[in-house]
Length: 198
Image 1: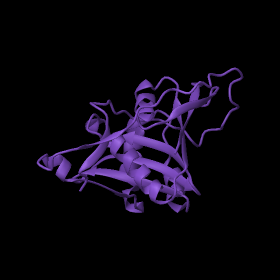
Image 2: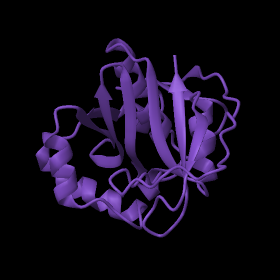
Image 3: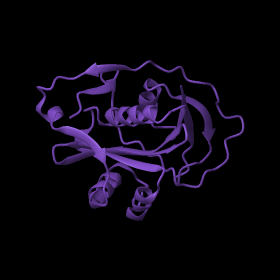
């Protein structure tokens, strides 16, 4: 049972297309490398009287979850990961896919890599029916808590430059923009490289 989330006020939660496995293009020359000030996250306790919250939990993905995870991925991302890609991540020893459940319903997932003290967030998705319920923040907070126990020193992710909701959420977790990647996504949109450091 999850009894807290890392939140500041009422945050919007969206699908966050990462397209990590797209071809990485060079950093734009003259790109904006200014650091965006980050906000400090504070734990906000939620009442166990909330029936849905009391039924929520996060667990590791299993191969039997593949069909549901792919369905959520396709609902959230225009350039969705394939079932084969998720299978490879499940077999990758440095990769972890965490699933957020409300009862028997899959509310979202996060895929991340941990190498040494470096965390990389590859893909985050929230099922449309469960947005604005703290799913994305709960998943990110869960991954950070585990990574801290494993010696976390820094974290990275890519996010679409137009995905202001995701950028705002990541800033509240302490991420800052460190680079801009030109035409990073398949549709030509630029990506922001964001970094968190201890």
